[in-house]
Image 1 (cartoon, rainbow, N blue to C red):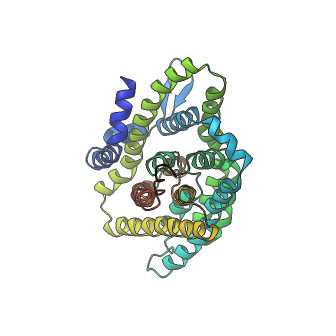
Image 2 (tube, helix red, strand yellow):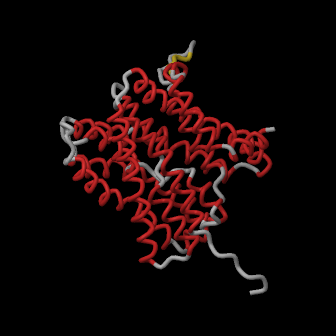
Image 3 (cartoon, rainbow, N blue to C red):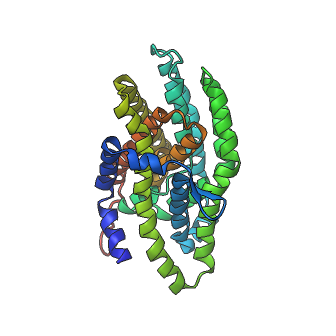
Length: 344
């Protein structure tokens, strides 16, 4: 039953995500309730729904890693290293360019609010969902899995560095807020919400006997996929609920435009770099996806934790989350490896 449910949701994931956005727009109440901190009596512990769901997704991703395929990648790490350099380097080119464009707008703070949200997006590790698109496009799956794992495990180091490097582009107090967010990412948030769940999944994949691992995956994978939809709804409720209560059409349009520009530039620069490196189609597809597909769920959770009083900043994060999936669909179609002729 779990397998059938996961298969059903996987084939309809795009439509279900759109439905969760619509539900957040017109029925944000349950999502806003889930965003609160919930005590767990009789203990003194509390539950934060969004970080818990993000941890579940990353635990599931680590649990399903094809470890045998990663051995060859570690012996020949050129594609992995190139992907990491591109994933970390492209934001340093894209964000200053977008900041320059935003300074020409009439916004009093030069678009620093939107820019803060976008910096949090591009500073995140490669999205685990990129492995799904790589599989659909018959790309280099070991390289993509390696990029997801490496960028996730390195995120307590790389995310604060990127935030600190790009924060001078901000004004109006947002640089201070981003510095606070960087300290949060460097501390307990990244470790407990991102790294530890992923590492626990990897450990389970290594030490558990095959029958136990299979049963655990059939339980966790559908739960994590459903959790990703719920997390989308929870994050969207915070942003879209406020939009419906206090419509701000100019801000909404600007968030969509800026998110689209950053997403497009990231994918285009990634594709150009793979051409210069003369990579074969499957590896080029994986590296291009890694350049544009960031863990927008992690950035939304971090943004909510660090700036809970500014839900409108989630708008570009939500827009980027949808746009990167649309762009990924085009990329895997165009860069699908040519079929090998029979007998050759």
